[in-house]
Amino acid sequence: MSRPEGYLGDHRFSFLNEERVVRPEDFGVPKTGLLWDYNFHYFDGLGHGARSEVQDSDWLSTWLANVPVGSSPAWDPYPLSRRLQNWARWVASGSPLPPPFASSMATQARHLERVLEYHLMANHLLTNAMALLAAGAVFGGLRGDRWQRVGRGLLERELEEQFLGDGGHFELSPTYHALLLADLMDLVEVCRRQEVEMPGAVPDVVRRGCRWMNVMTRSDGSVPLFNDAAYDAAPSASALGDHASELGLCSQPHRDDGFHWLRESGYFRYTSGRFDLVADVGAPGPSYQPGHAHCDMLTFDVCWDERPVVVDTGTSTYEPGPRRSLERGTAAHNTVQVGEYEQSETWAAFRLARRGRVVASRPTDSGFQATVRAFPNAWTTLQRTWDWNAEECRVLDRVIEGFGHGRTCRARLHFHPGIELSGCDHAWRADGLSIGFRGAKSVRAVDFEYAPEFNRRVSSTCLEIEFVDELETTFGG
Image (cartoon, rainbow, N blue to C red; front, side, top):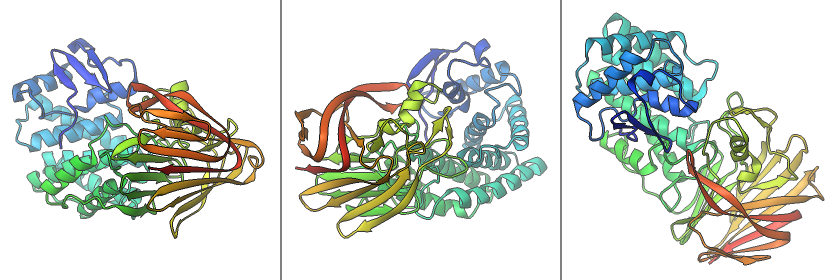
């Protein structure tokens, strides 16, 4: 399926909201920011957009002439895998395969086979597997058959490992979930066109994955920015559903109101009339690879009249530093913080040490209740209960035991930049949605930067609510 158009022509490239001029002689030179470099070497958008086939061929030829074999970051396993998938899709669509291009593609597939990312696992290894299978499907012959065999076997194992019973990808990022579904659908197209056998699990994974995206989609049509997530990095739920329908893998799911619990993923959505809520009541992701996890247990998003009101801060960067730490931290999410401690110990850009865990989570007669034990340097048990009826939704926070019991804790609500927030003390209004607090010692409005996309931050307002042991927050019309 189509990807964002990164190559603008005349040596201009735009990724992650940053446009740069890259001369041919600099194609193999690392730029500023590893993620931008990776995107530069993916070739997303190849075969799409306003460029002619000749212009796409020139783009490929320039890359081949100026990027040394084996150089980093171009030949790192992940960008190499994304590139192989895009090149295979381009070839399978009927585009000509010039000899230098075919030779390079074969060299890249051989290299990838030797450097599969078993050290990182998760979405990286799954992407490696899809790339090998796609390359093998395009080439055929003895070497192509071997890449197919290795890629298919690895893909089958990783699909079983990584996609949960409710259809979600186990890293629990809506963005990576959407990216992997898009890649799987591209693989379906390549295998069909090349008449190559596809792992039998793929259609079911796509069907369940699209249903998962449908449940996670808020009433405004967007997914919450839980964990590492950004709106410019992956297709939307509607685009994925449309493409899956075009491929005959599933019909476009219908979005139902009411309560939906993605038990294995640890998310739920509740929609009733004008009110829509999506909450995170799960653990920080797979124990052996929580690199994209945030300190966001018990966080939630709220939409009112199909407009986002309470939102997650989002992800603007993967570069190590204060901003990356802030966006992964507890204070960037709509949850409770004990002192200045973090739910889990984050370090570097993608590391998690001692981490919080879910003690219990269950639906109630009129809502949902989740209990977590978190804050490794100040172990505390917190319980959050959502209780709703036709008129309002109440969120009850309780500090059950541990370091935070009897001490001042802080809950936060981050508001979308498009919302006009007014009020004071215990009564506030976010456009047409009223928000009240009972048990609060103090409520104050502070500035924060909302990050809906990479390298894009928008000033907005957060309410910080201080309380001891119990706080009740009420949302109503």
